Length: 514
Image (tube, rainbow, N blue to C red; front, side):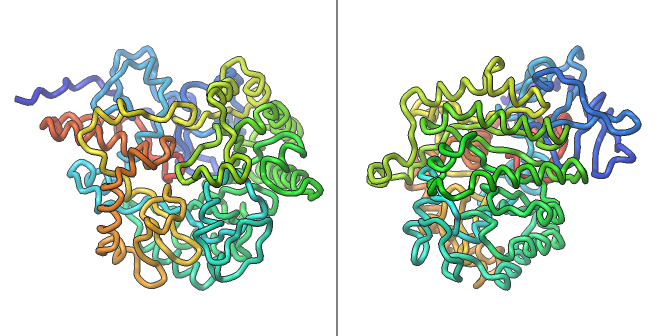
């Protein structure tokens, strides 16, 4: 006989109310504000204890995504752990847990399919839009390096390859692609992570983003920032814009990003960051503006200088100039083969203790954290990036290694090819169709997709190739826990846990913080 977990006292978000007089959708929760397009990407209260800035009338401004106390920590209640199925903790521990792993429960159609085990029918919450493979950088650690070298006609592994139809989607096909994505949405959720290459290499990127916005397709914009046009971006008002700074000095910046130091790209990047920050402070758009710091042996000692750059921008322009800063080690992707590593002098420069030493950047008393957070910009550690790659003992707890998250985050390439998963990084073995030739519903139901699914599961892709800090790996961990409960005839517990997660977390309104 299956024993159900007791119904713990879950405090629903009864205190949530719409906030009047704020330019974007917002909710009041106790003393803090949570915007409808934001969620916790770093746990707990604001780490340095700074007072919240306030709107006229006294309403506090949320200083980074998720700065919110979900409940009174003195309440005698139990709360569901977002990434451990069926587990509950007390209020104080709950207050320190990241809430973004709970996002999937707020898409009812997709969540129902998970509970029914219909993973293969789930439609993506977003696609990585790799609409160009052109970039002004040649970063040795670039996740798209094999794509730019081997999986595009003519290759684009050079600084500023000429834009052609062989490496960049033309405007007409881009509109068609966006329209088909909009038609394929589910639970009022479809988004594009505008990437590349660098998205700014697409000559018509801002026009295409405006078209996507008109079709209800949400946007995240990830760029090196050198050729970013902040005013045009904020006309689109994407959910977030993130610039990869990665270094604090010109020499290190050029070396880390693979271009001749005589070019003025470092100063261009700094100018664009300042311009975006200035427009943010002036116009207060809904767009979140973040800075990314990716670290290995080449730039680990440059992080203090990078932190000073971030702080100086906020010192000059004031609160709200930069919303957050993320930091993580460079990832050693499985598709970086040994031959490429040797020829490049190291696609990544990770020594055995690099991950451990880089974790020092995020310690409470680290100099980088102190500098960045002294101006009200939180330093956010990307989930799992500082953890060791899971070993055989981790996977031994599951009865299957099949990928269960392949439906959630797809990829569409410059030539219209649709990738099963955004973590395939353009590998043609994961191509399931072409959006110029068929609509996405036809592709999703097609035999080619089923064939690719069988092939990746036979190869144990989740266990052997999937980056452990990726969206896919994260969702797989949750879904495989659910399947273990299913095998034990304990789905009633899972359904209760999902219901409780919905009670004590808010929907994001987008998918970019999974």
